[in-house]
Image (cartoon, rainbow, N blue to C red; front, top):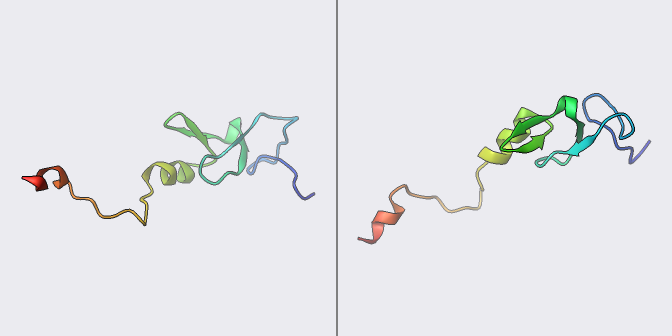
Length: 71
């Protein structure tokens, strides 16, 4: 059924389990299939790593000496 809300891993619905939404991919998952990182729930380790470690492709390159360049 289209639009049915359920855990992406086990298929439990909201009447069977508390469902959460992944901060990275926005899929729904139950507490049994959650992965926590930085106090946030994610549906997988991959989503957690992407959320915290992914680089912004539009950001300019940074230099560790950027603060010292003004001298």
